[in-house]
Structure formats: structure tokens, C-alpha cells
Length: 318
Length: 318
Image (cartoon, rainbow over the protein chains, first blue to last red):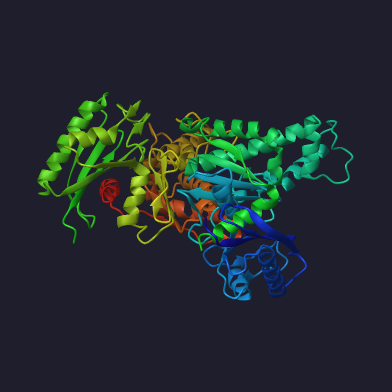
């Protein structure tokens, strides 16, 4: 048994989660700091480094930590930079994240990748994709992220930014406007935000009775709760969402012919409503040779640990 | 200088091209046999093996041939089989191509892959993609094929069939029927056949004057000739074709973030009419970070040699 340890950090728009992980994927100690209270990166890095030192101390692994793995939006694996991350209060420019954190940690090596790539590595190392060499991780959160694994390696592409499957065009022509400036992006339909958007649209366009009517604001969680109560409109919303996902998945299959597509994130909790329409639409849109062959599976990592585990798995390669 | 040689074979629906190639990519001798005069594979393999022996003899490389590389439709790199190739008269079932050919050649090793993958390897070894580690080869012929290279390796996927980008859905809803049984596939629009189909459709739907009117049959070559004469309808057909391609390319970029997309095949000869609409549609549909950054380039291999070179390049890895 390897007696060294790694640190995993998941940098989100609101909070950053930090944990110390052993070789079997057990999180020995963890903590959380705010990400969004800083508009400059330097004081954020200073607090982050303090928090890392604290969890290392708590877990009794001082001197035995091999490196730090970080998952963050708009992160570039090749450069170690976070570039133009509009969802990070201090991330609007190019931030030399790995360099800054490594310096603050006395030279400890830092590996950085985008959060969905980190999730893919985590799933391959500890979760639903163990033993798989070809799969696609799709994270269904506020947006839609992706981590693509081919021959056991995460695909980074020519510039380090490969795997932006939330921004393939799911609906051409009259598609919804996306934060990225394009229209019709998959994430405008198939994210938590997208589901809420569909709900608001459909409530306005139809008179259909629904438990969702009269709610002050609608989040995807409300749609999920309503669907569990058998609400027809809510069920139709998930059917639509699954269909949009499945159609895009069919194109992904034509690209890299994965063994499975692994779903992760808040919206993936609605699996009982999503799996069937996803599989139906995917199988209707792939070549006959793939029909019924590509598995839709769900993350097996505890959601509270998954982000940290995914990021930490990167650090083992350092 | 390596003093061994390889044989490249391009198996097409009508003919099979065979050539002996040296380490620098020079074709020392070549020949052609018919593919479509056989409805069983055994007599075809027997004639193919005879032809291979003939070109080896002609080129004076007897005893110095290291292996044979074959590019063929529906070919599986992992198994060496050709599976359910509807365009090959003897290919409707599973054909153990590599095994049969190797046996007929006294045990000489045979590597097999689909024709577009072979073209990608050829382009990387001898052509426009030299020095590139991340690119996508798109073959615009009777259909649309693709070979995807990530980190210097062809992507075969979980089952050996990855890279069927001709069958992503380019037009949803009311798309054209494809030979594969689906509708809206990229190749129903952006292949030589697709261009001819667009021409026939538009001639019927409009009264626009065109040099194409009155032709008995229309092939993509006629549309190209007309466009060179400045025919407005023909020019619009290429603009439409380029737009369809560029929109799909944008999704491919989101997947693997390639340095370039390399175009090859009969229809790629119309580059003076295709490049601009492709680039325009691609850049309009990618994330800002890729805008203007992904190159559209054209094969640099002589078309008569390219298929043989591509297939032969595989054999060096044997």
C-alpha cells in the first residue's frame, strides 16, 4: 500500500472544497472556503493555501503529500492556467493558478484541469468507469460539462481545452441563447438551468395544470419533486430533456465510440426520468452497429466527495 | 535509410489499388484489380494476393516487405475484420479479411483499418498533417468518412469503429434519408452524392436559371464545373454545402479541439468554393476561444497515391 497522499481541490463559483485523499480514494479530512468573496486571485490563493495546510495537518499527513490536483472551470491542463472564467469572481483574465498555488505551498507540484475532466479521472480511478478505457463523462450541473476518455487518457486536444460538449449545437436555427454567446447549445436545454428554463417556457406557453404553477421561482429541483409526484408537465420536461441529451449523445458516439456515457451532477439525480428518453433518442440516432450497445451509467461517487476525489486523482500522475 | 518496404492496399467498392511503398513514401510499383466482380470473398482474396505478389516482384522488393496495410470500408482495426460492408459485393457479412490475406501471403502480417483512418495516417506520415498530433481527417467522397487523430494516435474507440462523422445528424427533424437508415446524416448533404442531391432538389424547387438545367444526370463534378463558370445556383449549392460542413465541424472542435481539419476526396477539389462558407459557419458555431483558430487544410497527397500511401503507413507499425 502506497503510504503517500494527495490533495484534491474542487474550485467552484461559490465555494472551493479541499480534501486529503489516500491511495484507495478515502477522503481523510476536508474543508471548504468561499471562492466568491475575492475579486483578486492573490488573497484567494493565500486563504486556499492556509486551508490546504490545515487539512494536511488534521489528517496527519504532513511531509507525505505528493501533490495537489485541482479541478476548476476554464482550466488548461497544459499551461496550469485558468483562462477567462466568467463564473469565478477573480477569474476574468488569465490566472496562473498552478504556479501561484505551488509557490504558496512551498513548491508542492500542482496539476490543474477543468472540473469535468477531473470528474472523469475520478470516475475512472474510483467510480463507475473503473476498468473502462473509452467513456465520456457528462456533468449535468448549472451548465453541461464533459470529460472525454480515449484509450485510458483524458482528451485535452491541441490547446488543452477539448471536451466542451455542453456547447455543441443541440438545436439549430431557433435555439436558446447561451451564456457563451452562441445559440442552441446543449447546456441551454440539458443543464439544471436548462430544465428550469424549459419549465418556465412551457408554463407560459400552455394552460396545462401543473404543481409547478404558482411557484415564485422554479429550479430543476422543483421539477424533479413534481415529477416524483407524477406531475405530467414535469414528466414531459424530463422526457424532452432526455431526448435532447440522447440526440447529442448519438453524435458523440459517432465520434469516439465509447463503452459508456457516465452522467454526474445535480440533474443526474433525476435518473429515473432521464434514462429511458436518453436511451431511446440515442439509439434512434446512432448507426445500427451501436444500437443498444452504448451504456448510460451514473456516477458511483458520493457527491460530497466526488469533486475532491476527481481532482485528487490527477495528482497521482504528478 | 530503412531498406524494408510495405504494401498498401485501398479496397474500394469498385476497384482495389495495390502499391509497394518505401520508407519515404514513394510508390515503387502499383496495380489495380476489380473489387466488384466477386460475390464471395475467397476468390477475391486469391486474385488480390496474386496482384500483391506481382507488384512486389515488379518493384524488386521480394523478401524485403515488412507487412501489408489495408484501408477498407467498415473495417475494424482491432479484429482485422470487415463487417457488414454494404458497398462491397462480397462484404455483407463478417469477413476475416486480415486473416485471409495474411494466409494467402504466406503469413505476412496484415493491418486493416477503415479507409478514412488510413487516409489520416497517410496525411500524418506524408502529407498536410505532418507534425500535427491533433487533427481530424474528413473524406468527402461518395460518402463522408473521418479519421480522428488525438495525441498522435488514430481513435478507434471501444469497439474499433470510432470516427463515423459522416453519420452525425447535420439536419434534425426533416433531414434527408441516409443509406444507413437514419435521417439528416452529414453525408446526405456534404458528400459528392449529397451535392448532386442538393442540385436536383433546388432545380426542381426553383425556376432559377442555371447551366445545370437540362443535364440528363447531375454529378457533383457538373456542379463544380458550373460553379467555375460562375453559375449562381451552383455557387449557392457549394455555399450551402460548406455551411452544413462548417456547422458540424464546430461540434467536432468542441469534442477534440483539433489543430486542423484536413479535407480529402473528390469533393475537396472544390476548395475555392467550400473554404469560405466552411470557415464562416464553423467560427460562428464554436466557443469564442476557438474562433479563427482551427485551420481548414486540404490533403497534400496526390490523389492517385493517397489511398495506397495511407494504407501502407499502417503497415510500418506492424
